[in-house]
Each structure stands twice: as structure tokens, then as C-alpha cells.
Length: 192
Length: 284
Image 1 (cartoon, each protein chain N blue to C red):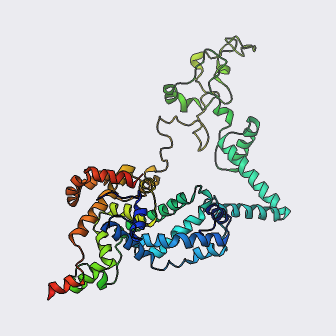
Image 2: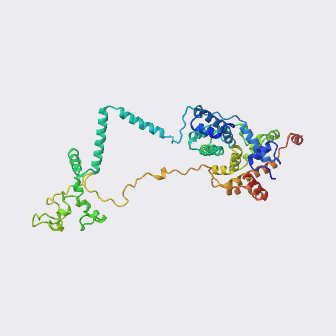
Image 3: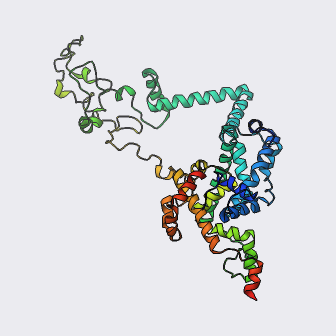
């Protein structure tokens, strides 16, 4: 895709060329699914397929460059995610218990140390942000959208999105500084 | 946070991941780690419907609403069936349609006067309905040529409307006036005992009882204003609430961020000039 001009791909996809639709899917679907998973979707794969069905069926009405197309795709993804949140609020989903998803348990020192060193710790940090701060940061890092695109997508003012991003980053920094990973050596010293 | 050489959040993340950043930012490092961990998961498998698009088996519905092809298909099928039908079918169908149209217009009383008379006679003969001829119903329509007449006012219609419609039997008020009194009248008076204006309301035929208004015929009482079709569609049910594509709690705008207890302390941090500079750099 990188070596194929986006305009050519878009034009071919509009005419129903399978290779162009496959290019669009392979380029954007992983990011969309990752964004939906990071945002907590329980049906990220299904939602991703729904998003791209909507993309393919409305492709003729789209006009713009690749950045605008990316914003368009993530706008659809964001709206599907909001729909899922509303569905879940009306009918809570029942999921099987698993240790990884049980937030009530108190981690042991070893688990805590391992988690702090890993990605799970970072995920837990970002989950402490407010939903809107999380939306802004995840849309920016996953979709690589501009502030203006995020503001348009979320229906907010540009200044409000800037404030959300600034405060989200500040909160992350402060909380990470307060819970700096101990490291294995420090852990051994503490427990011995 | 100190200043950075780059201006964009994601660019700074990339630089930091590559070791190019001036200062290690734990927040950016965490975001980079989160993004990479989620993107490391293999992409989702396409659903069957998406597979159809990717295989080119499904034509793209370009610029058309979802239901339109179905309606067009039904219409085309109906036309094809009509064209392919036999002559007897076509004649029968056309006759039925024409009969339905003429009957509907006749019942509505909108046929031309001669045709309407014939229709009324036929309807009276063939059906139990006693439909008064149309000219009876037109008897008391205001005559615009006569300046002495005026259009009936609602109060007039309420008091005389149902009564005036019976018993005139083809004569208008002008004809019932004393012949010769009108400047337009060219016929001599048929008799000396011609009724004056006060006798105009005496029914023709000397006290013949008025025909009760038939269902569907005769004058209709004037409906009071506002008594018309008041049973329109319930807009309250059909009206959809405007789609709210965003988060449910729209009221939580940027101002709502200040309501977070944990952010109370951040407000002071955010107002630091250094943070504002960072913001400008971020979003340039």
C-alpha cells in the first residue's frame, strides 16, 4: 500500500476492485480493532467488520485524501463503539470470570512487580484516566488523527480536545511518577 | 515537562521509541507501549460479509440507499408481468381500473354535470343509496353574477344550510324570485300569485315533505372550525430524537473535567506557562 497511491486505491475500491478493498482492509482494520480493544470493546472483531462494511458501502460518497479517509474510518469506529456502550448499558453483558479481568484481587508483590514492568501496568495507568481523556489519547496514538479531526469526531471544540489531551498526559505522568516500577533488584531488597 | 524538539504527539512517541527524544517521558512511553501491544495482536478476521467485499462478489452499493434496489426490482417485475400478460388480462385490468376511477370520482361528485346526473341515477337505481342529484346540491351555491347575493356566512349555513337543500327541485333562488322582478329576467310571470321573497322558502310541490339527507348525498352540515381531520400521524411517536453520535454524557465537556476531584490539583499545573507552550507545540 505504501507504494500505491492512495487515490488509485480509493478509485479502484469505489469500482469494487477486490485488491483495493483488501488493501484498505489490511491497512486499517488492525488499527481499528486495536483501538476498539484498547477502548474496552468486548466485540472488537465484529465491530471492525461492521465498520468496514459501512466503509465499503459508502465509499462513493467519500472525498478527500488519506488523512481524511483515516478520520472517516475512525469516526465510524468510534460511533460503533458508542453504540456498543449504549447497548451494554441497557443490557449488561455476562462474561465468565477470569483472574486477568478481576480487578478486586490484590496482587502479590511478585505479580505487582511483573505487572509494573509490563504492558499491563501501562494499560492500567491509562484506564485511570477519564473516558474522554482516554478517547482523545487513544484516537491520537492509534489513528494518528489531528486535534481538529478528533474534535470533529467527538463533537467537541478544538480547545476542549486540547485540554483533554493536556490533562490526560499530565495525569499519566503524575501517576506514573507516583508508582514508579520498582525493578527486580529493588523488589528483592524490599522483600528480603 | 520540558520542551521537545518535535511538535506532534505521535511524532514525539516515535522519536522516543527510537531513542531520539531529548527527555524520557513516562506518559509517552506508556502510550507507545500500549499501542504496540495492541497492534502486535494479529488483525481481526473479516466477517463473511466483508469477505464478500474483499472477494469482489458483492457489488458496492454506490450512492444508493439500501432499500432502493429492492423497490426498483419490484416495480420492474410488475411492469414485466403486465407486459407479458395476455390481452384478456390487460383488457380486464384496464376496465377494472377505469371503472374504479369513474366510480370514485362519481361518488366524490366531481364528474361533469351531465355525467354526474347519469351517475346519480344509476347509483340510485342500482344501490340502496338515495343520492340526490348534483344540481340539487348546487342549488344554493352563491351566484356571483347577482350583486344582491352574498356568499353564505357560517351563521347562515348553520341556521339554514340543512333546510335549504331540500324541496327546491332544480330551481335556484333566482328562479324562485318573482319573475320579472329581476332585470335579467326575460320570462313573463306565470301567475299573479307568484310568491314574493318571503315565500321563496316554501318548497316546490306544496308542502311535500323534505327528503331526508341520504348518506353520501344532500347537503352536509358545516363542520365547525377545527373539526376536520385532526387525527394526523402522531408526530410524537415518529419523531426520532436527534442522533447523538458521541459519548452519552455530552454535558461533560471540557469544563466537566474540572469536576474531577483528581484533576483539581492539575488545574494549577495546567495553568503553568510551560504547559501552555507544550500545548501550542503539540497542536501546531
